[in-house]
Amino acid sequence: MLRGLRIAKEHQVTKLCLQIDSSVVAGMLSRKERWNPGITGLIQQCHNLIEWEGWEVKVYHVYREANRVADILANLGCAQPLGVIVHDTPPRDVLEALYADSLGVYWPRRYVF
Image 1 (cartoon, rainbow, N blue to C red):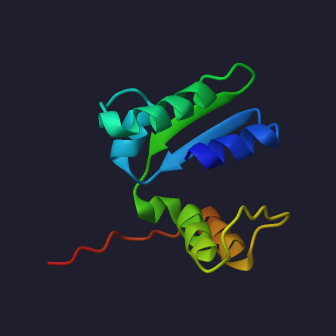
Image 2 (cartoon, helix red, strand yellow):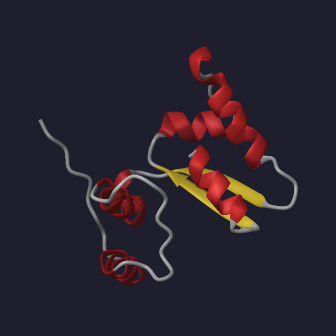
């Protein structure tokens, strides 16, 4: 999250919507949940960026199924060498997921029993 916030700030993003599939992390960033003292510095750096004057940041928890684009980008990132990759245009898989979203395609949550 911290790196993403820094990249958004460097690219002069003025409005940012963070959709996070971890309810715990979303709660920490929204200051609704306590966090482990071992990560206080990391969370504080995120808070400092979120509260930075000049931009608007909203933090939401979403289920992974509702966050398909981020999940696709994370999977693509795992297959790449280390470093930051900035896409000038969305990868094909992302465009397909966005198109499915625009059609209202429903992705049911899978439960394993």
